[in-house]
Image (cartoon, rainbow, N blue to C red; front, side):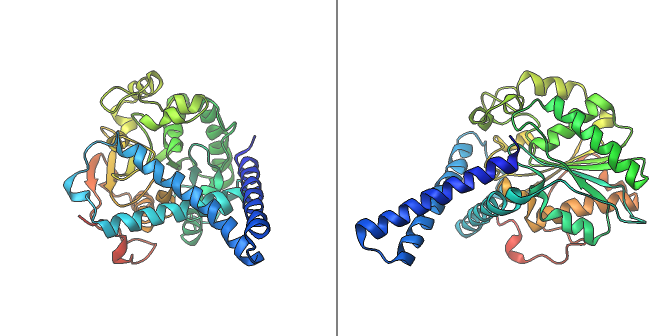
Length: 340
């Protein structure tokens, strides 16, 4: 089943539950129709909020220590929770429930075309905030829906190869940049292992469990197992260890890993860091919100801009993003900065 169809079914179930609660409030508690409707919607939203908060609680148990520079004040933590909940609601209830893969070619595009690869349980709708920035910068790009939902990551690599073929053919480019969120970053690495890196200008991973996440045990499917990690201090699963062993320094130098020290899905959080890659760490952002947070979007656009300018700052290093990047997404509000 496609992610879009599954989300639509879940939304219909939620709507039915809200309607049932509303009718019950009207029938048994003499509530006005508008009060019943409000109560029904509030009940569903509250359940969604509890699920969201529970992810933070589960991840905190295996997260590892937060570096002092990324520790948050209570107000910043509340903003992070609100941003993550808002992002989750908008993506699952609107963007991903309506999304279809697309490809957009801009004549005389200044950069290599970009392939956007979504994460576990998502689809191309995850890129509802980054895709418009690419359009505004006149960067050719494409999205895809990885199928099946619970499939083999190595099988996804073949789907990426087909999309790379199409994107290169239609744009006339010899290389692409790949931006992958969560599992999508691991899929990008699996594609490199299977098909080589000759056509890769840059792989930018966002919140990817490169060394596994303990929360993968709550997922279903072969892809969840391939991102597994039994304990915070233990090794990643055999599949990830084999993927790690397949990469030489030249391949690692093509990777930028952007991650957050407050990830509520990838835990322990440091597993997103890759030796030999360019690692960009930030704080105060949850896992789903990585796709819409302005600091993250600015960092992605800065990495892509570095390709156009041929700067050396795309090489291997680690960097703490203590302040927002100021690129084509414009000046960012002070409230988006990490608070120590």
